[in-house]
Length: 209
Image 1 (cartoon, rainbow, N blue to C red):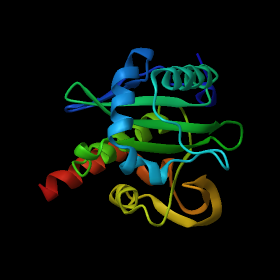
Image 2: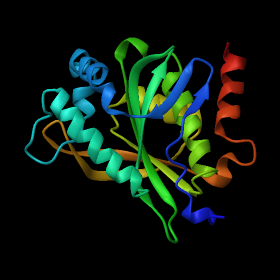
Image 3: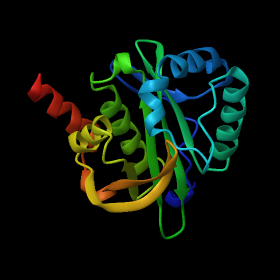
């Protein structure tokens, strides 16, 4: 039996209602490329790149290279690249990155979604599903989301889910032509135990509904 800190929890498929999170696969290329092209203006301002490099034009070849790299990282237990499926349609992506073991047991989360599906509770539900999975099957203790202060849509996600603001990271990532400040938010396992984040979020939605 694996020890808790050795569990990878991958590959996995997670579901809640019409929402499914599953591993990204090579056959996602046409849907991924189409979404990225249609949402260039929506996603571009928040997309990190190496310094001096612009975001590449979405292409099948580019996606394949990216997906294979993510598969390598996932197989090494360092990442979990999820496709966000809603009603059977590919609508975005949620990635668990920088998985660190040992005494740290942490990771960071990043996400994007088709503009036409934004504001419908899909991303908060997806994040809640992944948080619960990471705190249970994967055995992590801390999850972090870093958001540019100007990114109001992403700020609403962390606010809705109760992530705690931990401070400003100056010049944290190269985004949109410069090193940009980000605000760091985090959740610990004990912040959502014992019931988990998804149940809390769905109860909140029900009260708002």
